[in-house]
Image (tube, rainbow, N blue to C red; front, side, top):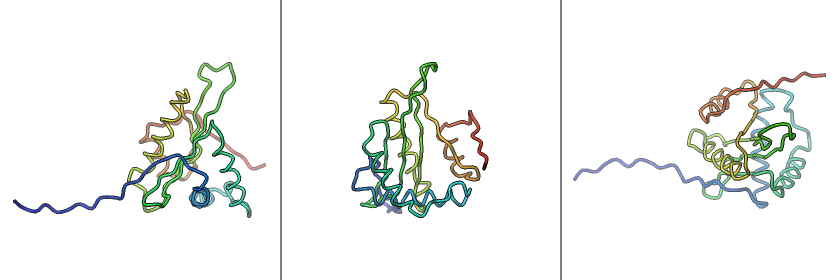
Length: 166
C-alpha cells in the first residue's frame, strides 16, 4: 500500500446567530466593512463616535424579531458577519414580506472558503421561515468582488439605486 499525500483542511467554521457577548467582535468586523465602503465612496464616511453608535445600534438589533444578526466563528474567533431583516410593504403589494440583506462581510484571509455563502444560506433560511419569498440588497459601486459574489448566489439587478449630494 502506498502513502497518499495529506491535504490540509481548512478549520471548520460555524455559522450561528450573534449573541450579546459577540458585540465587541461584531463591532470590529463591521468597522472593517465600513472602512472598505468608505474607501469606495465618501458617502460612507464614519463619524468620530461610530463605534459606540454602532454598538448601541447592534444591541438594539439583537433584541428584534424582524432582524437576524449572524456570525461565522472559527476556533473562538469571529471571521464573518451578516445582517438581514424582514420588512413589510404596504397592503397594495401582493408579496408584502421582503427580506433585506443589510450586510455580509467576511474577514480578509477567510474569503473564498464558503464563509459568506454559509452566512447567506443561514439568513435566507431564516427569512423563508419568516414567510419571505424575495430578498433584496444593495452593493456599493466599485466593489466587483461583492457583485460577483451576489451574482453567483443568484441575485440579479432589478432596480438601480441612485444618490445625489445636496
